[in-house]
Length: 205
Image 1 (cartoon, rainbow, N blue to C red):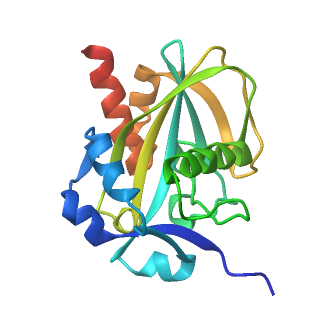
Image 2 (image 1 turned 90 degrees about the vertical axis):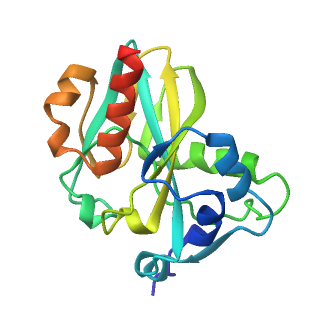
């Protein structure tokens, strides 16, 4: 019998203490300081987390961009999140699971970033140098999926468009311009729509 998947969560009250928001917030440091305080994050069984809105599953959401074009894909039938199957996405990432070398004490930001890189490497192969930064957090309590997840948006600027898929649930992967993405916005998962709106505003700013 397969072991039950454990996922990284934070209690919703931690988010409430800092200030609940809907959509994107760019006050990154204030929120991350709260999330990464000792004792705030823990692992629980995924089935429990999916049904308990008092918990928020922490999800890294990595948007990859090269020369004004953004990596995009469609979630295939093998996706672990059945509620997002057939949705277009511009975010790579997923649940953070415990591994032997991942203790929940010390400098958790470094541990978290290592987990982000590991999660990305499970889904795609990045064969180019890149610059990375955390640009926003996502909270969307308007949907069933969003109510139990909290996204951390990472923006990776790639030197070259050298990405290949590793995970079978990733289909139709390609770099698209913002206008091309806007044309298929209605086919996107909610988080990707929010990130696309941010990229559009940034491009017009």
